[in-house]
Amino acid sequence: MKKYIKLFSLSLTLFLSIFLLNTSIKAASATISVKSNNSVVVGNTVKVTVTLSSSSSLGSWDFSIGYDTSLLRMTSSTAESGQRSVGYVSGSGQTSKTYTFNFKALKSGTAKVYVNNAEVYAFDESLMSVSKGSKSISIKTQAEIEASYSKNNYLKSLSVDGYELSPTFDKETLEYTVELDSTVESIKVNASVEDSTASLIGGGEISVVEGSNTIELVVTAQNGNTRTYKITANVKEINPINVEVNNKKYTVVKRKSALSAPDNFTETTVVINNEEIPALYNEITDYTVVGLKDEEGIVELFIYDLDSGKYTKYQELNFNSNKIFLLDAVDVPKGLKETTITINEKEVKAYKFDDNSVYYIVYGINLNTGNKDFYMYDSEEYTIQRYDTTMIDKLTKEKDRYLSIVLVLSCVCFLSMLFLLIEVNKYNKIKNEK
Image 1: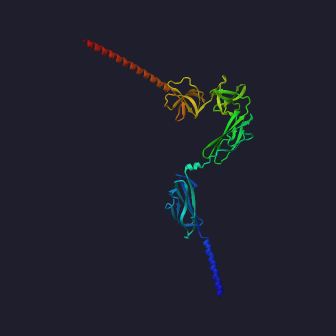
Image 2: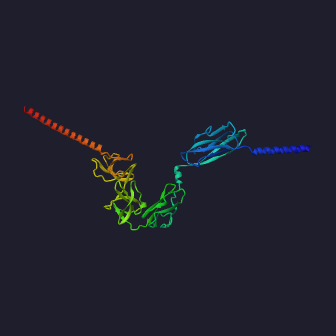
Image 3: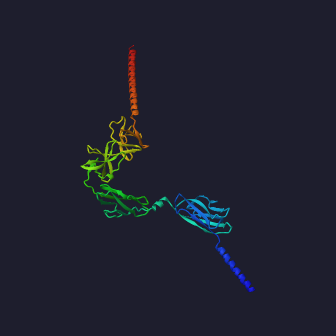
């Protein structure tokens, strides 16, 4: 019997040991994580998020946050006592609680924000084991950050679909040429940067016209430095028509697709050097414009005089619904002085009454109506309106009238003074004779 009692006691002891061990293994645990940005600029604020979490219901907690006071200064906190959080829940089911702490970065270095002392209880008041987190934050000045930026602004590759570049691509070589057939209207330029932090502007599908076409690809390094690669695409031109306007050499554009029609212009053709050339015509103004390409491959519109064969640069100024083409004024209003002004990135001839005035007078034809008139341009608000000379003429006449009145009065005063002086002189002579 004693043998069975002893065996039972041993079995009970073993069972209780296993039960207690299993209970200990399954004891509730909690984690306090610390998260923030990896870096911050000196003088800026970094937000640190601290989260208490558990798979079991939380009861209460008491923990504090530590940090490098020489590198960081706490500016705000949602914790109950600044650096310290002391809290509890009123009902079961809550498994997490989050706090935020804001710090100002004081100087360069690597700052650590960490959980200091921590005591967490489950909702059943059992003590939880706590895993305490931390976060390292790199602090640098703006100058230190910029100094670390990549200076690499090289292309890794450069090519044109279906054609060979001359010379062969080398990242140190900035200028290339490619020869194209006369029928080619566009090419595809492929390029990639050597450094992934660099940016590239240019490339892709590029329209080309007969003659020389300049294609630029600009690589900007992370630190802002740029490097420009240039491709000169030469489209073979059959019997080019070369002209010269204001001592600058141009080639007449023979391809319709290279012309961009302004408002109120329709497609037409003109004959130049016995060749039919694409052109644009405005019925309102009776202007015919053609495209001229300069030596850099830039196409601009020029008014073509069908009788004289002369070319005049087409400069259209757009102001909302108004479209004005500037002309040389014939009868400039009295009192205006000739000057120049830049409008819509174009330098044009203008007139003004006073050097200090912000208003300029220009003369041109309204491309919507065909009317020629003077216009007043406000250089501060960038607006334009038709210049009303009626008031100015009236003021000028009033000014002339008042000037005439002043002149007459001045003459009367002068003659009166002269007469008075003569009479005084006579009186003095008579007095002296007595």
